[in-house]
Image (cartoon, rainbow, N blue to C red; front, side, top):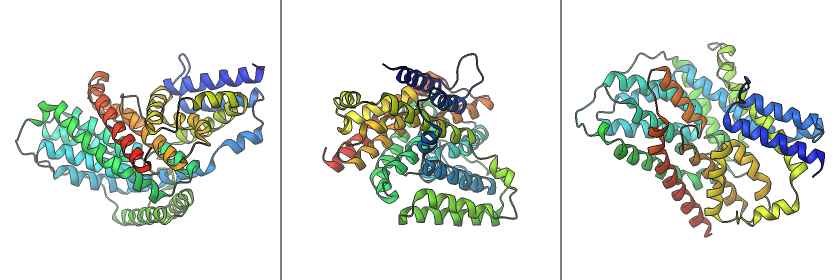
Length: 410
């Protein structure tokens, strides 16, 4: 192997290993820093020229994610999430109904808005309500994390990996939702049932619940504008307008306001996530250029990735090994040229998303819920999560693989 290929392989392995761990021992580097360091390494080693690195960054994906972050920021700052979720949860009159409301509210919001942002809002609200009601918070927090992942599988804008799939595959928003919304609906039912019966002590009580809505700061004019623009953006998605164009146009329109200081909106933008995406695009491009050979592609093709069940298993395993966004980028060169590209990309979106429910570190959404719980003095143990995460993941993946294979007949 040539020196350039060796350098590319080393950079790729170290970058993906660091992203999987979330840090490099002994250094204060997060995932974004690791990805950017890997990208710089590809340039320094001469694997890519600066021009090739610039072209490797998929600006449509970055633009879509940025636009959705700004839209969600306006909804959050206006009080929309607090109003909707607060009303829903405080109108649940028994533990089982409360669980159902948590799952459905989280799942539906996550289907159209970025699931990580939904968890940032839902986790503190659930903690507050369960504390006031004297209930065990952990089952409901597990429901938030798992329902956010499951619900987000339904659309291109549900999570970052779906955004990458949507941009690369060019699957129309409506076709994507039509194919995967049934999987999300079935998955939310599975989450409800398993949390209900695997945390049976919490749901044995038939005593009614009554929680008064918490005090929420609502800015009605700004909320009305944010809802109207969001509805218009979603309508544009279904109308076939390019998702990046629709999202950034809606975001720009929301920035024209006299009520919200721009700094408040900018603080809601996950800059490190955008930087991580850019870095990973460059690292993967370098690895493709230096390491991807016909022999390697042929060897991977022997895994029969065109088979829905095989691809589901490979994607789920890879997603838990290196995280879901990197897994999608790694799989891209190996599935190009396979038949029925739309089904292939739908399988990758489905499996990479649902695999995030396996462990508490399987997705950013899970980690957000765990951190919010820890800050409130509630610990979600690795084993407690795993006891529900494993059956939820296996069952939802099986449902997803069965559904997509039945649609295509493969």
